[in-house]
Image (tube, rainbow, N blue to C red; front, top):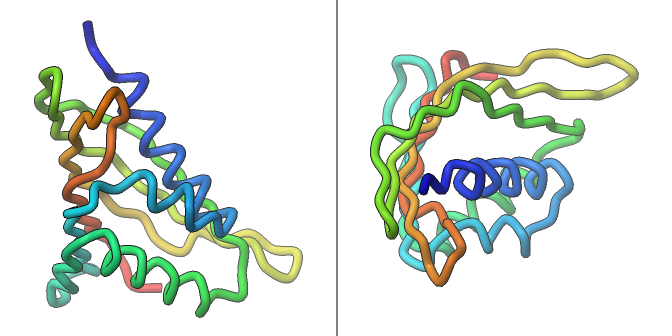
Length: 135
């Protein structure tokens, strides 16, 4: 039986936690040895941020620098492989910002993720974020 719903919930829990500045829930979405990388457009690779503490440091710094309300929208989720303990996925990201009574698209991009099932909870072990444009 597919764990698609549980895997999708991991993505949505992370996005909602980021948008609500809920660092505890966001941290629960990553494994202790998680790795995160980012590439913006054709720019250099940023990272890797290795380990949950490093990943969460990036998240804390990013949140601290924002004056707007972010909305991360994850769509077109494709599960490339899945077994009882691991999965690889790709999905689209649309990043919105609300500020001063206006909403705007900041960027779009793609997530490439590896997840592991730890005691019935799917967590991100590797996440690569490829943004189409800087913002």
